[in-house]
Image (cartoon, rainbow, N blue to C red):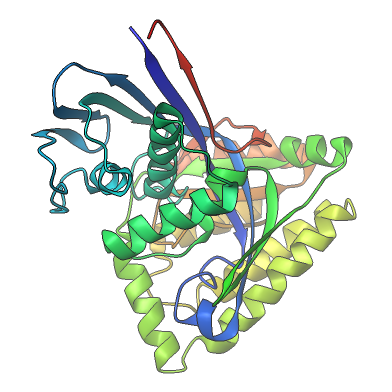
Length: 336
C-alpha cells in the first residue's frame, strides 16, 4: 500500500516573538530570531478506495466525513486538515495520521507545524510543486485567516525553512535570512542549552488578544520595538560566536517580553526562571506566546546539569533535543 509521509520541525523562539503579530508587524515591521529543534510534527497519508476522509490525531482526536464535492465545514473539529483539504480541492478518499512531539499550547509552534506537515504531505501526494515561501504563506493564511486561530507568522516559516533564521515581517511579505553558525559555535551552544517543560500548556489566543489590545492602547509599543532590535542583535552575536552575549540578550529580551501582556508570565514561571539563574543560567525565556509550555535557557557550561537538576526539583521536565538544520520534508513509499 502506498503511503505519503512528511515531517516538519518545531521551533524555539529566541527573540522578537510577538513582533510578527498584526497589527504591529504590518504597521511597524517585525523581526524574530528563532531556531528549529529535533522535535517534530508528522503527517502520514494513505489513499483509500472510498470518497471518505478519515483523520486520526494524537492531540486533536478523530474525524471522518465524505468528500461529496463541497468544502468541509470549519467548525472547530480537525480544522487544520480540513482547511488544507478544501484548499487543494481533494476529491479522492484518504486516511491521515497526525502525530506531534509536543502538545498544543506548548510554545513550540505546534499547530502551525502540524498544518505545514499536512500541506507538505498533500502537496507530495498530488504532485503540487511549491516554493518554501508559497508553502509558509499558505499555512499562515489557512490557519490565521480561514480558520481564525490567532497568532503570528514565525511558526509557519520556521517549520518550512528550518535552522537558525532572522525573519523580518512587513505588510508586503516576509524575509527569511539564514544564520549560518560555525560548527564549533553550534556545538558549544548545544552543550550549554536547557529546554524544559513547565508542566502546563496555555491558550495562546488569549495572550495574543491581550498583547494586541495593549499595542492598540500604546502600552507595549516600546517593548515590542526593543524586542525587535534584540532579535537582530542576537542573530549578529551568534554569527560572531559570542554565546555569552547571546545568553545575555536572552535575559534582556525576556524582561521586555513580559511587558507585552500581564499574561506572559506567572508565579510558577518566575520561580523556575529565578531558580535557573541562581543555579548558573545566564539567560532564558518562555518559548512562544508565554503563560506556560516550554522554557529555554543558556547556561555557563559547567552549570548546565546543576540548572537542569534545580528545574526538575521544581517540577519541570527537562527535555533532550538537538538543533535541527532542515525544514519540512515529504516522501512516499510502498506500492502505488
